[in-house]
Length: 222
Image (cartoon, rainbow, N blue to C red; front, side):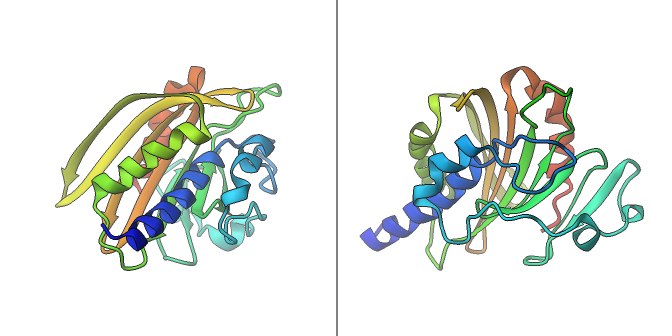
């Protein structure tokens, strides 16, 4: 790969990693504004793209069509940039345009003392015409994880193909700020764009919300 391509790939992965870091979301489930964890956002802000800001999202009424379009107990989200749609549980909330991600869905708080909301975010990264292989994209991401996550541990990884599209999956854990977290992340490259899905949870709550997060991921119509 040419040096210029390597530089471009590094920048692309930096944005994906930034979105990953910003998945440490806290705050009230009734507050969709500025509730990204300060420790997560500040740790990556020095390398942030200008578009990677924790700005308030548009209202749910403006972004999410009527729930009648979704399965029972779910609402439908449609983003205005790519026109992609997702279905999410009606007791979850969402934030848009954080860290370059299209949207992040946040689980309901488990109690008044619950300071971290498990969440899943979706990123589409334009690779700028580079012919990037999925293996290279994933490898570059893994190399950066250790700089963003304290006590980073890769627990599992693997690939699979569905409908002719190859996807790669990572499962890893570590610490960000005061939180001990676990991540499940999936990658695919389709027609010059990287598609990244990241589920983030406190280690003790990972299994509690992973099925709902998986349902959201499976509903992604891009």
